Image (cartoon, rainbow, N blue to C red):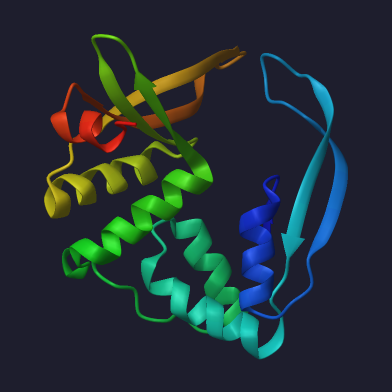
Length: 182
């Protein structure tokens, strides 16, 4: 199942795979320390049967998170071969990063009088996942991300981190300025 608050990518997914597009609302609560209750509004498209199996088999080699790999293996009834990090091509990594940044991160463009910058962030509660992505980006693309701890909270067992992100900031490059000339 592919679920997002943004309709456009889910609608495109449902058209490509010829499956239905659904709208879902459900109550949820933001994590500590804020605990705000709200209605989550999402669009969803689900692949089942042979389409679901085909999709899972083709995505599996690029899964980085072990929990997701285990879930996919249970779904398929076997564990497909993963693609080793060192075998990823720069194009595969570029596509992966673009998809991950769109889905679990974002981009901010700042066009100031004296400063022009682009900031790309990828968020996750799994610091190992972000570390793996950071390693791949540095090794394959020469892109240096910083890992940042964003939200921490206190429990009876001590301080816990709820969210991390990796960040890339590019400032004052001529190509950015030239790309946005009117």
